[in-house]
Structure formats: C-alpha cells, structure tokens
Length: 301
Image 1 (tube, rainbow, N blue to C red):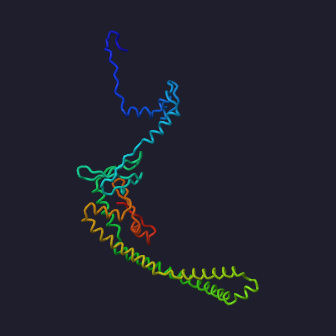
Image 2: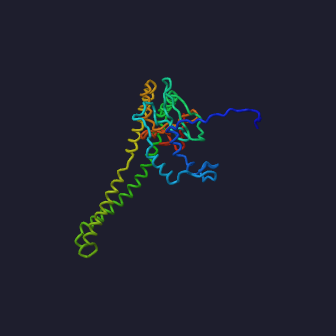
Image 3: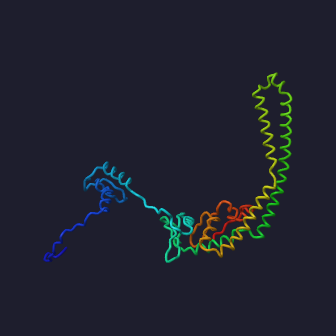
C-alpha cells in the first residue's frame, strides 16, 4: 500500500536485557510446550508451532516454582479501627480500613456483580450509625411493661401445665416407690423362686431408682427461672442504656471497644447499616420478637 518511490531507512534491531521477570514469565508460559490459547481462554495443542520442552518437564518446573514462592505478611497488623468487623451486606467481603490525610476510611473490593455500590466511606459514617443503633437496642419503659405482662401470662399458663404434670409425676413416683419397697422386702423370695437372678434383681432396683430420681428433677421446673432470666435481660438493657450516653462522649478507640463488645459484625449496603450482636446481646436484635412478639422485625439503620 506504500508508494514504491518512498524510501525508508532500515531500523536496527535492538534487544532489551533479560531480567528476572522475563525468566519467570517464560518458565510459566505453556506456549513453550507447543500450546496456544483458544477462544475460551484454555490452552490447546498448537498446529503452527512445536514445543521446545516436554509437558513433563514443564510440570516439574511449576512444582519447583511453587516451592520457591514466598508470601509477604505484616509481622504486626496495622493499628486501624474496626479491622475485620465491617462487611458488605451482599457479598460479605470485608471492608479494609486505611488512613488518608489523617482520616480513616473503609474500602471494599466486592466480588464481580455485587449489588452494593457503597464502596468507600470514613469512620465517621460508622461511628454515627452505630450510635443510632445503640440508642435503639435497649428496652423502653413501655416495652418492659409489655414484656412483664407477657411473662405473667406465660407463667400462668406454665403453672397450669405444671400442676397437671405434677399429678402425673406423683402417680408414677408412687408406683415406683411401691415396686422398690416390694423388691427390697422380698429379695430372698424373688431369688429363691427364680423370678430374678442376683444380677437382674440389682439391675431392676437400679433402674427404678434412676427413674425416681429423674422424676424428682423434673419437678424442680418453676417460674423462678423465668423471672431470673427476665431480671438479667432488664439489667443488661439498663447497662446498654448507660453505654449509649457514654458512647456520645467517647474517643474513637473507646468507641471501637464498645462496638466490638456489643456487635460481632456490621453489614453495609447503600448507605444503610445492619448488624449482628455478640452472644449475650441477641435478645436486643429483634426486640420484642425475641421474647413475646412473634411478628417483630429488625429495622436497619
């Protein structure tokens, strides 16, 4: 396509010096075994060139290269707030904390196709959202009254069922005691007549004693355990209420300690924050749903 009269100067061939990266690419390139990439990105035998090394030798080189690889890790993790706590709501990738111009930010490299577009935010965003969460975790006075009423109803129903169970248990205990008394007062007769062997008699007596002990343990079920549980829940609610006030005036490191104590994970998506509580705080996740209200729902912040 070029005009014949045009004259071109010949450009001298030059070569760059080979470095370690060139050698590494050559040793890990299946092209030299006589293969090329197809349209699907897979290596297939080539029809245009022959390999200069065998596949067996190439595989042995790959094994040796893997043995030489060294992963570089920090000996100590950088001091960044909430490292490993904040995740993407959709793909659950961890947001990585980093500092820029003295401000800590969080960034997530979500998986391909993740719906979350909120990839980057600063610590202040998490700080404010968590403050709102903590303020909504503890029970209000109205909710405590409502739970007290629910618990009172539950205890009344439990007490009625318990009386029925106690009557049945008492009859079973009476029958077992009679059987035990008969065996203990007639051991010699039962052995002489061959009704029981010595081993079978001992086994029967042990079995009846175990059944009696089991029934006596079941009788210990009462409303005291339920009341004690509710007391602990209300006490924890009061502590969280006090923490909400302290959180407002705490420094970033103190706030991180509070967040790690209450929450195991925080999930971010589209400018909203969901959460998962640590053990012991699960009763506050769904509020009344955890104790009384089967239709309660948790609202993200």
